[in-house]
Length: 66
Image 1 (cartoon, rainbow, N blue to C red):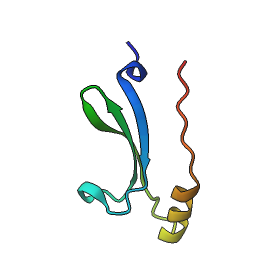
Image 2: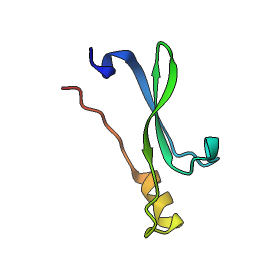
Image 3: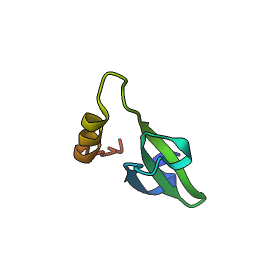
Image 4: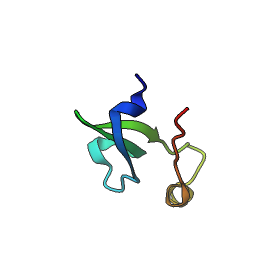
């Protein structure tokens, strides 16, 4: 069974409050058994915080089920 069959919805959180001490953007998967982090988007060291914020504001994440 594909993991996509177990996840009902996804939510992209830019994580401005640094939830759980994590500074990354987070993609959450919502399923029957609760919510889990699916993907973290971390800031590379060579990119400024301002540029990273611009990246998070313009990002569009899509999952393609095959």
